[in-house]
Each structure stands twice: as structure tokens, then as C-alpha cells.
Amino acid sequence: SASLAADLKLKRNLAQAIAETLPRMGPTETTRTRYRVALVVGLAQLGLDTATMTVADLKRDDWRERLAAWESSPATRNGVRTAVSAFLSRFLGDVYHPFRREVLHRDRWPRLKVPHRVKGFAAAEFWPLMRLIPERLVPSCVVLAASGMRIGEYLHASIRADEEHHVIETT
Image 1 (tube, rainbow, N blue to C red):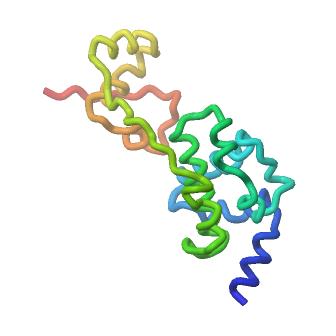
Image 2 (spheres, rainbow, N blue to C red):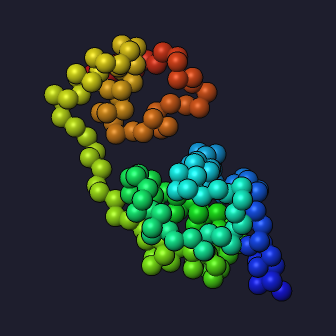
């Protein structure tokens, strides 16, 4: 009966299934937002109309062909793949569900190799860049660059982006 229930789920409208499943995807709102963008925007950019598709249509698609024609970075493509994986795992209630494994099989939807990201750049490039941003934001950028922190680690959620940020100088 569990496989029959899963088969019935696969006949549901994809857009509705995504909307209902998104609140349960990922531990944080940031993760859910990333999944939402990848599923809604990414699938649309791949030429899929989720409003007219069923969940089962994800298996019928030729992902290799679509991904080859999509002008985006390998990281973006992998992000859509990850979001589809998370969606199917939550929607079907099983990370090992045969349908999920078939859709995401490496022969159908390969995980692309992402080139290594440059973690920094020379000081000679940094200061000319700092002259292009508002002066009040330069101290924050210096802290981020010097510490290696991400913006989410540096800014508290209650601080608005348009507020002035101060860095306390230490010796």
C-alpha cells in the first residue's frame, strides 16, 4: 500500500506539490529560500512549466539535453539537482525511493564538476574595489575580507542592510 500511495503522489501537479513540500525542506529559512529559487526559477529556466506538469513528469524528461542547452554555471545546475533531490526525498518520504533514484541517476542527471572558487584576490585589486562602494560600508568589507567570514555570519538578522556598520579598531 505504501508504493500505491507513492504512485498516487506522483500524479499530483508539480507546482502544487512543490508549494506544499517547501515548508518542510531544509532546516533554515535560508535553505528553504535557496530550494524555492532553484525549484521555481531553475526549473522554469530549464524550460519546464511546473503548472502543467505532474511530479511523474520529472522522470520523463531528458535532463542531459536540457542541462547542456542551459547557459548557467555548473554550480547553479547542481543547485537545481540538489533542490529536486531534496524535494523528492521530502515529498515521497524516502531518500531511497526508486522514483527519486531514477530521476537523479547519474546517467540521466549527472552531477557536474564545479571549478574551484578563488578564495581571495590580491590587495592591489581590493582597495580599488573599495573605492567603488559607499565609504560607510568599507569597514564592514575589510572585516569580511580579513576574517573570511560570510555576510550572514557578520550581520545579525536584526540589522538592516542600509544601516551604518562600525568596526571597532583593535591594536
